[in-house]
Length: 203
Image (cartoon, rainbow, N blue to C red; front, side, top):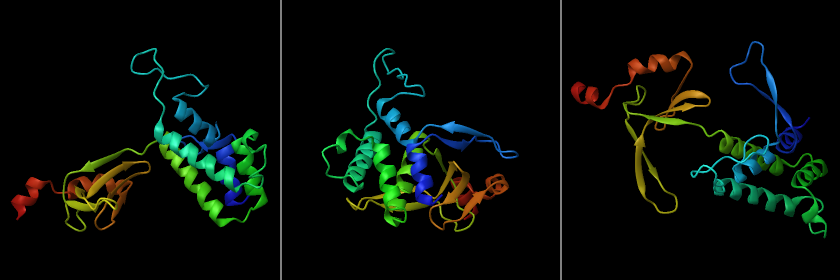
């Protein structure tokens, strides 16, 4: 199975996913198609199609606009690119069928492969957002405490902590020098990172 076919399968078909925390041996469970999970996220429903309660208890949850924008982007791109584009029956054909037909018609399409990989990653992050925690202290590798980021549209500068901890996968990264710490190195990092007070006293 090509990378494109495998990714399209995850997007449009029920597929196997490894249960977190199981490695020796790994255990797997059935997961709904990513496109279906995205639709559920838009509607604010959980597995089984049951609506999640809103802030008022019995009220309907608000539509997830970011998920809706992503679903609309995927729908528009597929409607324009699949082999049946422009035919009168296009709107009646399921989105998953169109995407599979497109991939089967052009299995070596590198651009479509990259696009499907990006969609799969975006949907997964929307469903399971990566948690990040800023770490206040000095990077033991480059001695920086903050990094400056510039908004590409407004040109506005913002300063963020250089060190950030992520939960999936578990690691710590410095946004200045690019050094990362994983596994046991994360535990040792705590003794290496100097707090602002320690930095001032050392100087």
